[in-house]
Length: 483
Figure 1 (tube, rainbow, N blue to C red):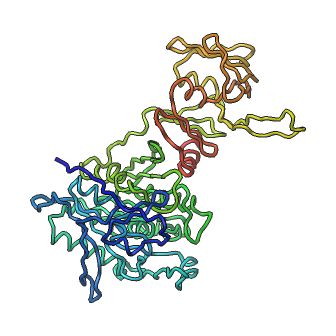
Figure 2 (figure 1 turned 180 degrees about the horizontal axis):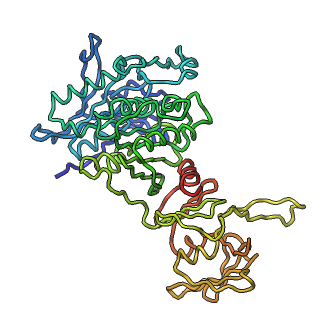
Figure 3 (figure 1 turned 180 degrees about the vertical axis):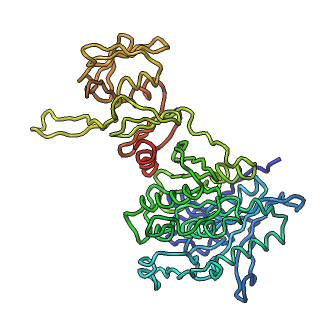
């Protein structure tokens, strides 16, 4: 039987503006900052110091759940902190200790060897830019070309071996996870030592594209196939590379799609602010996760999502099996005559387009946009709903007769809809284009079918539950699925 998770009350420190206040250690102080929320210092978190590689002393933290008795082999999760943080800081800013209590696995939180920053492979222009301390005391190490000479990587491997000697660890169920710079390091470990891990994940830290790809567009390293999940934040900006976030996201995603043989379209699942795309690969799976309305960091439930959507599936022997996306969903993009309906691609009779609802009376020739809506062909809507279409006036009027007996009638230029012989206003007027009548799909599905619509840029996502489409997921839909 699994243990129950219990959240403990903490003392909020809203005046704090430090990255990781030292006073938190061993206290009940908590810090809340747009989702980067901490928990009271876990009672069972233990600190250790020992020379595990050479003579230099390394520091790390272990969390052993109360249910562990050594009678059976358990999984090990290695979770790496962000730059300028610590192992104990990673423990309090995640929910890995809670998931460990429930599932019975052990968590290792190592410290970076020097200056609280990991020795990561970095592209040259950034290394030159911050090759000396900035006002915050942050600067990068020049990582050696040979990973065998990378002290941080060798310490992590040595600590994993130490944990295997000390506890009953299942060597085939060792996982790695990291946040920010820890994400970059976790990715680095996976690229060079993929055979040591059952799966890996990370949040908000993206490896420089020049590190992943050579000038010919080929991977610089060719890891063994390993399931990977990457979590990104919608409002994240790559440090030192403002404006390049989208390119970094695509480059990191493409690397593991290539490595794992993920050639098919993903299955989409958007629940609340969590946007997920599940790729099934010939060799291993890949999961892309993006959080709506979040800045750099990791959400407190990131560990829960990683465990649920990847690590637990490996533990339970389900890796490689199909993960279901949203059962009822429609994705559309302006300019595309394709729609992604219930996780399959369908053709529409004409491309969707954005139409502005205007106010212009009394503005002396000027206008104000009061709403912009994605317009879709009535014929597509009929196919989606299993309705019959009756057209009149050369297609400038259309009536939808639904299987449940309801009838909707639309006409070019009219914002009105006739529903069962009653008039009702839509979000904007019907538009006739290229011999086809178009209406705002989100109005019909949300108003009369109880669906939920979320738009981001020129992409619209409609499903049967609360969902908020995020910026880079919208780009993924537009560029990879509906292109």
